[in-house]
Amino acid sequence: MGRKVAVPLQPRRIISLVPSQTELLHYFGLEDSVVGITKFCIHPKEWFEHKTRIGGTKNVNFNKVKALNPDLIIGNKEENQKEDILELEKLTPVWMSDISNMDQSYQMIHMLSQIVGESDKGTKLVADLQKDFLEIKKLFSSSKFKKKVLYLIWRKPYMSIGSETFIHSIIEDYLQLENVLSNASRYPEVDLEKCPKPDYIFLSSEPYPFKAQHIKEIQDKFPESKVLLVDGEYFSWYGSRLLGASDYFKKLLKEMVF
Image (cartoon, rainbow, N blue to C red; front, side, top):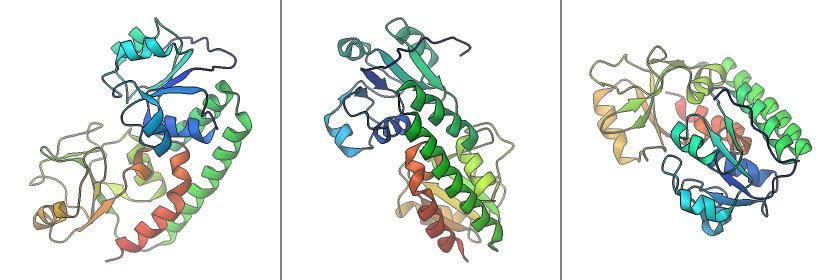
């Protein structure tokens, strides 16, 4: 947003407006410091059940925020709305991330760990993720499988992902697949009748919760493609959630074999 943000040396009352960054704060051990989260911050379960929810990522309840008297709010350029952030920063410092690839995720982890006084944990997490994702890249690079993929995130209308998204980066940079809509806008609507024919179609678990019953309707339109349900968290959550990515993508690779 082109701002300078003065953050308290040791923030004690933090509100997170981003699910993946909420989970990251839990990884840093900030049980007592995080006082507010969104209704989409489902991890960890105990925080979702017991922490104060201040609305959604794009419909913040300002009265609840004020009542919590935060000394730091953490947001994200894509997840949150600019007008909300401009209003919230009148109350307290608001630190923003902007992430469309793993390098930016690593940078966010480092910076946030410094802000909350947990630099060592941030350094270790980045090192672990770098190791895991190098192994993921090597595994998919050495495997022989078809390459073209359509990744669907919504139904009625169907929507997918273009370039400059974190999901696109995971697909192309690490899974070594070709996003058939890489030249499209960030989150394009998709006409399945005109869409380039993919080898794989990934139906994400979020934001639309694709289920097994949706496979047939897609398979009927693309009889030669392999349609798979995928866990959207491992494609779009940039933080400690990705510690499980290595095991997940190894299992996914086995499912991809025709």
